[in-house]
Image (cartoon, rainbow, N blue to C red):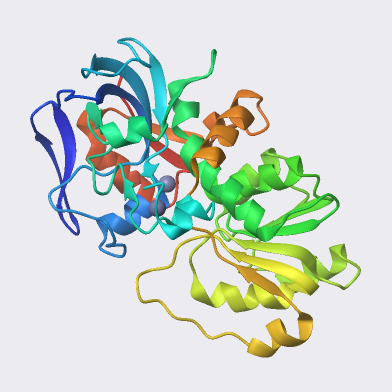
Length: 346
Ligand SMILES: [Zn+2]
Ligand SMILES: [Zn+2]
């Protein structure tokens, strides 16, 4: 089969590798849609290394059709349309037992420890089936939309950590696909208003089209002035970093009101450090949280939200490439001119 094989950092090659076959307890999917994630771009450039193997096939946001069913698998059959939560928890460690399987000590993930979606076929390991990580795509939902259940589920986790509530003013820094998902989820949660800050004009326009209440071009206007004008000078209740720039963490601390919440959602480059005014957290009683991956429950909820059109994720995919053209897909994703880029295997 054709696959985009990551041979080393900054060395991605379109090559032919053996088509996987389903061993006992496994499935093989024909990949139908696999979206490129910001994390993939950080893996490609060597900025994210945890769990990454060489050579390997990355890609953890995908959906497909079952084409090979291993012995002992009763729940799925050939032709089933499925999508997969790529993060497989061990279900036995201290964190799994404490309902924090997203930070499982022994977690393995498809697209990391197991080959992922940037290929014509994907083998789903038996432990993923045993853990219930394979989901049927709801009727009427496209493969593309289903592929976005993973990033949306990560945002569900982040929103929970940020404690977005009815009536909140929410600021999202960054209007890439993740920022736009956060904006949609905040609105669904009953936010009074959603403000987005984004230097890229195309992305600001995408935010406006999706109904956010205010957008800011931080290179040409004062975000602080905008936030204060819209919040009686108090600041927002919640700020979410949907872009991994360490300096923005401190800026977010200055933009939330006393008792506000800041969620550092986007991952930063390995080893990144930043400077923060610690007194902002102290005197303003700000709650700072992070966000790592997703739980199986988040994934299922994200699928329901997509099925109910609470989030119109499919419209976030702006560029599509065949597996043959995978390298072009990553080049496009790197330009920042796209929202979501996906490989499509019709
Ligand atoms: Zn992702
Ligand atoms: Zn665990």
